[in-house]
Length: 405
Ligand SMILES: *Cc1c(COP(=O)(O)O)cnc(C)c1O
Image 1 (cartoon, rainbow, N blue to C red):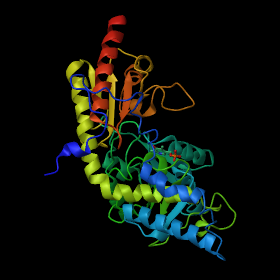
Image 2: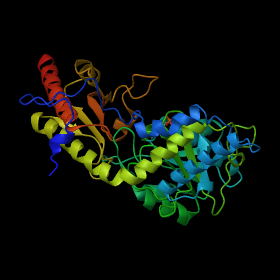
Image 3: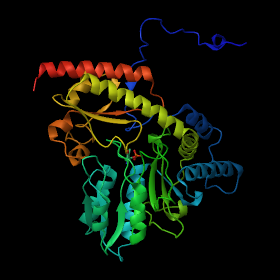
Image 4: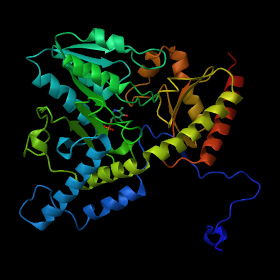
C-alpha cells in the first residue's frame, strides 16, 4: 500500500507552533487578485513566438492570434451564458462601464434622457452618470437599505417614459453585497428599459446568466478574477441587437464598437481565467466562505462593538467588511501593516473622504472610518485567516485602550 508519506513535501511542518504563514498576507482581493499561475502559463507564448496581430488575415501569425482570441471569446461567453459574438474586448471594467453607459445615452437620446443607478456603485459608473448629467441627462440615484440592497419597488417607481437605461452592479466592491439582478432584469425587460450591470466583482464568483437574468450589457474585468490587468470585456446583447456607438474610433475592430489592435496575451489570460472559474467556482466559493466565516467568528467573538457592514446572506463569499467602533481604520492598518486590507477611509485613490458606500448604508463618518474591508480569495489559507484574526484583535484592543471612547 502506498502511504501519503511518499509524497510529503521536503519541509515538514513544525510540530508545536501553529504554522505561521508567509508574510505579508494579501487580503485585498477586491482591489485586485493575484494572477493564477495557470493563466500566466497560457499567456506566455503570446508575448513570445505567438506575437501575431489578430487582425492580420493574410498569414499564419495572424490566424494563430485570431484563433486564440476566438477561443477566449468562447470561454468568456460560456461563463455568463452569452454567445461569443456578444463579447467586446476593452481595457477593463472602467472602460466597459463608460462604453455601456455613455453609449446607450448617445444611441437612445431620441427616446429619452433619463438614467437610473444606485448610490453604492463604483466610481466608473457614478462618474459616467455625472458626466451625462452635465450634458443634460437626468439621473436617479436609488438609495439602498441598511443591508446594502436596493428596494425593487423604488426601482419600479423610478422608471418613467423617458428612462433609457438602468445600471446596477451585480456585487459591491466594498461590502460584497449581491443585488437581486434577476428581479431587476425582469423589471427592466417588462418596462422596455435597457439594463447594464457592472459585474466586475461577480463574474467568476457567483453564477451569472445574461439570458436568464435579462441583462443587456455587462462589464467584466480580468484582474478581479485572477486574470491580468488592463483587459476587460463588455457583453453587448445581440438578440435583439443592441448597438453601442464607439468611444474609440479606428480600424473598426470589435464590430466597430471598440477599435484598436487587440491585446492578445491579455485576452488569452481573461479567457483562461473564465475557464478556470467555470470549473472551480462552485467549490471555491464554499471553501472561501468557510474561511470568511472563520474570520468573522474569531473577530466578533473576541471583540465587542464590532459590526458587519452589509447583508451577510446576499454577499460574496470572500467579502467581510467590519466596523471596529472606537478605532480608526487607517491606524489599524498601520499597526497590522504586514496584512494587506483596505479601510473605509481610503477607498478612492483621489481622496481621504470616508467611503460613499458605507455612508449610503447609514454609517456615520466615524463608524465608516473605523471599518476594514477583508477580501479573501483563491489563494487565502486557513493559517493566514487565523494569523490575521489574532493580529487584528490585538491591534483593536490596544488602540481602544489608547483612546477609550
Ligand atoms: C475594479 C472595479 C472596476 C474597475 O475595473 P478596472 O478593470 O480596474 O477598470 C469597476 N467596477 C467594480 C465594481 C470594480 O470592482
